[in-house]
Structure formats: structure tokens, C-alpha cells
Length: 391
Image 1: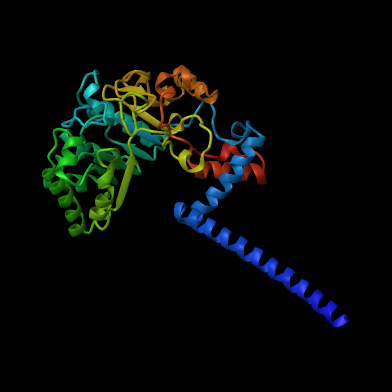
Image 2: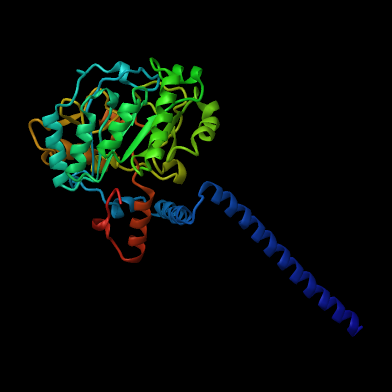
């Protein structure tokens, strides 16, 4: 009888251990699958760490809705912009279907060299890190482009950048780009077939842009140059969706960077069928509440006539806070008008600025900044004065 009792007892222990082992294995399996699925979306450990911290941060926000106001580096005043974006030309040779350029009513022309050089001088003296020399125009139409890029580099701007449709970027202009010292260039190439490309990039020729792009890449390789970093970009929308994979396969071994950019509606100013949801940087991935637009704190927009706009989506210059012909950028950047715009964003009162209220592509603060801010808050207290929006 004792033997049977011992057997029953041992059997119970065995079953219990087996159940614990089975449950442990199942939990480990589920966790393993979950982590693998998660890592497919977040492919490196740094992103995994940031996403994990932001997940905790999101839970904390539910307990304390004022958390972001406590820890993030937003004030009405801002340091001199680290990114200055002058529109050197607002004349274009294309009428792309997703661009507001065809609707533009403001005067078209070139930014005066004297005005641009004064802006470069001031920006370099105040520590600007990047200068983007393009906007609502095709920069290759500007015969003085190479000289302007050279001037910015000579004055010590660390990163110069421009975006082009590539249609005019022949071998001569490619050599001009190399000689200028340009740091980064994006060629917008929306499609891998003539039919798609020319339907999207109206007035442009597929074969010519393809030839120019291949020539630029070939010359850079032959010359053994590190700069400029060449990005090939395709905008993801109904017209191009079926060609995204072909685009990646065609260019992945040649371009330095491939950029698949989600189409947007320029703050509600352009009708785009595929503009659904919100592609603001960091929000889709982490599902965090809308913050003030970070561009208001670090990115200065200067239109061709010297007007300072609050946003690069303002293609017709409807919200202007000053003009660099009359006032320095430093003064404009913290002028009463600019601070009033920031104040509305700080209050989350986006509706009082129609351009901002309708925006689905506002620049969210970099997820790394949120992570750093939150870790500082948890471990050392309040250190938002040491944070920068573009760290």
C-alpha cells in the first residue's frame, strides 16, 4: 500500500513537473515568436531598446497625461535653426501629380545671390548644421547652383543637400555637383516603367532621367568619390505601389540609400487618394500622441523672395513670420510672430493655424529624443534643458 502511495505521490510530482515544463516551454515559445515578429518590424537592437522604452513611456502617459509637457524640450524661444532650407529657385520643369507646384500663385524666380550669401554667412556663424538648397523648383535650372553650394561649404556648413527630379542632371551637371562639394543628393524617380513614371512626373522623359541617374552613379564610382551620398527615392502611392519591389531590386546595388516615401497631401492642400492615416515620423510606429511640430524649433524655411515661412508645405507662402531682406534670421526666429505660432503648438491649439490643423505629415520629435527624455526623467529627474530636438 505504501508502495502504491509512493507511486501516486511520485506520479503527481512527475505530472506537476511535466505541466510546469510544458507551460514554461509554451510561454518561451510564445515569447520567442512574439520577439521574432517584433524584431522583423524593429530590425536592430538599438531600435528594439528605443521601442521598448517608448512602450513603457506610452503606459506612463495613460497614468500621467501631462508627462510630455514635463520632460520634453519645448519652449517658446528656440536656438538658431540647425537646419536652414532656402528656396534657391521656385521654377520647375515638371507638373507632378502629387505636388502643389502647378497651383502656386506666388511670383516665380531665383533667390538673389546677395540675399542667399548673407543667409549662409549668418547661418554658418550661428552653428547651422545643414542647408537644403531646393524647395518648390528644380534646382538644376539654376545656372549658379554649383557656386552657391561651394560658398556654403567654404563658409563651414557641415551638410549641404538638395533634391532633384534628375531630368536635367546630365554629365556636365553631374561634374558640377562633384566639384561643388555637395554632401547629399536625392533623385526622385517615381516608377520603373515609362508608363508609370511619365504619368506621375508629367512633362518629364523616363529614358532621359534613367540615363542621367545611371551616369551620375557610374561617374561617382569611377572617380572613387565618397560624396555626395546618392539617394534614390520613390513615392508610395496608387500609381507606384505595384513597382516598389522592382524599384528596390533595380537600384539596391547602386544607390547609397533607397527611400520609399509615403505620399502626403501637403497639409490638406493637395488631393491624394492614398493619403490615409498619419505618417508623421515616429507616430505610426509607436502610436504616441501628437506633439508640437519639431520643425518650428529647428528648421527655418526661406522662400525665394526672402519670406520666412513656418513650414515647407506652405507652397504659396500663406503663413509668413518675416523676411530676411529686412531682418536677420536670428531676430525672425524668436520674433513675436514665431513665438506665437510655437505657443499655439505648445497648447496643442493646432486648429488656430489652418495649415497645421489639416496636417497629416507634421514632424514628430525624434523617438530617440523621447527615449532620452524619459530615461532622464526616470533616473536623474528633469533634464530637458540638456536635450536637443535634433540630437
